[in-house]
Structures are given as C-alpha cells and as structure tokens.
Image 1: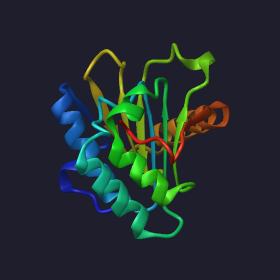
Image 2 (image 1 turned 90 degrees about the vertical axis):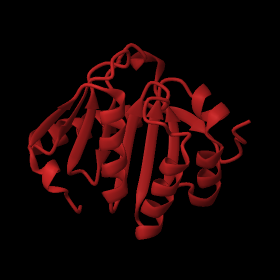
Image 3 (image 1 turned 90 degrees about the horizontal axis):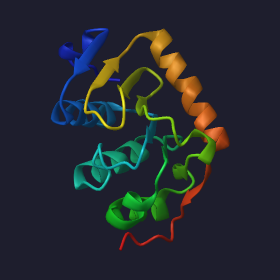
Image 4 (image 1 turned 45 degrees about the vertical axis):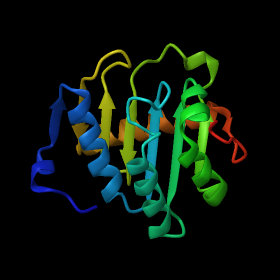
Length: 165
C-alpha cells in the first residue's frame, strides 16, 4: 500500500465526518487487494458517490484476486441510493459482495473499514462522526477477526439484480 507521510502516524483520530471520509477515500484509493467495510447502512462513507464507485472499480481491476466485502445492518440505503454499486455488483460478483448483518448483531454500533489487511479505519459509534485510523498490527488483526465473524454470520444481501431505484 502506498502510504502518505501523514499516514505514518500509528494512530490518528478524526473528529468530523469530512476528515473520516477523506481518510476513507485515501485508503480505498491505495488498496491493492482487499477492502472490507462494516457499517450501519453505508451512508456515512458515501457508498453512493461516484468517487467510491470509481475507487472500487479500480481496486477490482488491479488484480484478478482483488475483493470487496461490505456488511451493513440495513440494506435500504444501498438498494435505493447506490445504483453505481449495483452496476459494479453485476460486473464483479462474487469478488464484490454486499451482505446484511445477522439480526443478533444489529445492536453492535461500531463500524470499520479494513484495506489490504494492513490498515483499519474505525467508527467509534454509528451516531457519532468520531473515527480512528490505525496501522497497528494488533488493532488491524482484531478488526479482521471481528469482520470475519460478521461475514460468517451474515445474511444474503444485495444481489446483482438490484437496480438502485
């Protein structure tokens, strides 16, 4: 992963949604192999944006084994407002998956984004913009483990047939 000198801090706190989204955009633009996203609905990160769709398409084009997995509590935002993501699903399924979290974890309210299993961007709570960028191996490993559990128990999500209308 190509890392900005600013990103070399082992840990950085972001207080605003704008700062968090800038960090999100930086890490997905640099991801080479994988992107894992867990969120309440995907709206905070702007999954409906052209910039996200372009970065996701670029990631999937970089390597034939590249993958993106998104797990959300509520699929409605993605189904209604993310037609670009639906187009990518049609073109890149099964390397791009959008899953719904199991009802048993719906009370869990801390989001995360993991890029290339080397960096994690965590949301403190879905109701707050506070986020944390971390390259620490232990923090990344804990997030990878949590995400794997979420995926293992997730329900089918958005299919490649959803139009986003």
